[in-house]
Length: 77
Image (cartoon, rainbow, N blue to C red; front, side):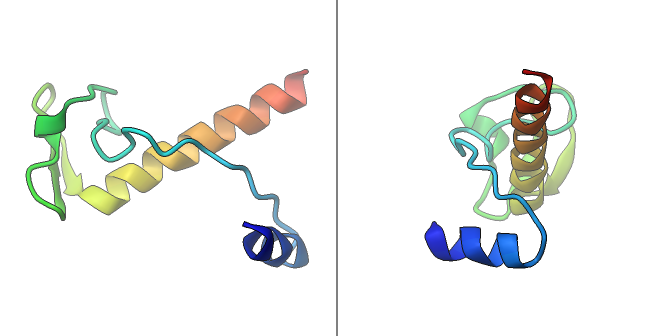
């Protein structure tokens, strides 16, 4: 992680470590988390709301939101 930290810093960015657990099973639209949401390695389809996306893109949105929430909580403290 140190190389990534240095690269982020040199680009004027801040690296925020996020727990990736269940990010690929959680719907980025409604928040429903289920193993069945991940239909294949590449496909995501929420069994609650029907949202579909590429599984990696769906997980990336969840990771981004988690990082932003951590950043906002740190700034508020």
